[in-house]
Length: 514
Image (cartoon, rainbow, N blue to C red):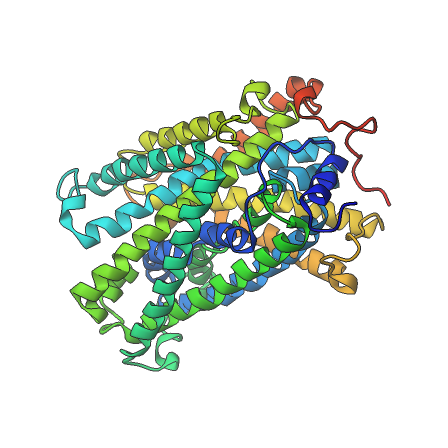
């Protein structure tokens, strides 16, 4: 007899989706929570893009933090229902497939996979924002004053980080989980200590800081609203990736119950801790109008407020946070590639879906995804605007991938075909309004982030239309080109590979219809 939460029950739930269990279930509650919160990574996101928010929206950009949280909370609540029903690897891909059919599933998985590889490159760039602040020794290329010194050095440091995460992920989920959990523990402790230290150095009131706009947006059509919407990218970058807790569902214990909790805990913890760090940083910085605030960001606040010794200790904790964030992004990308390959939905699927008998993890996807991320970095080695461009495109594609889940889910609700699994996470009567808000939020924020602003996509050098419209061009090519490949080539091959199919005469179930 199998009971809910037992490995046998979890494997039976996986078999209902048409798959046999191949990944080892070793992850407990904290591991799944750590996976979600390390992908969000409070310290990585806040330290990487605080300068961007302040430079484009002034200290008042802080209000974008609760705005983004509320929008993403709607998305996360929808994901919690899905995580309870489908706790399976490659969460976004499988959810989109179950809700919208194989075509929508493939497009959602393709967009998320591409976005994850771009995001892997984007997160790796955070080393450049932090390590040279600790010591000039980490500025290996030039002295940092040259036009492309920072970008080229960022590529070098990022390549080292991607190499590290590739090796760790290739050696199995248990090693990854240990490193990730230890890193998350350090990050959470460091974040709380940082909040306390900054709170002890307050120099102004919230009213004085959170209403300061630096006069940005004056004279433009939208006024400060336009500046605020641009600055909101700094908050939008941090609060995504919470679905990772479910993407490790085939390696987690009782994922149907634990994954929804982990998703919400990761998002709420990130909102509270990150929001306090940003708030107290703005209240504690000696000079709110200092030029360095819009250039060096939180690193400048920490060093100028807490002093060199304490500041550098905090920055080393940020380096640890960046490392485990990169590790989580890489891990989630691997599970997504594995899930798509298992359905014969990628080239060389049988090789990509192969699980190492020694390490019990898909090794080839770890290597290929790492190589693609490095290639993305190398292409941009001499681009001074590498940080904002790569980050923006990664965020937009993930928001679009989320839309390819929440929108089909809304269609299923409106048709009366969606029912949460009994006895587990359910939104009840709030499901429809929450789902509608999730779709509206995802569409509006995707458009906002992709808007062809020169300050984001063509901040330096000559103005070119293809740079200004870079997000639309790049994402359009990925979406249209990718789906064309699927329609004319891949869809004829789609189906669970025999070596990965559950031993059941019924096979995988169709999308929910009742």
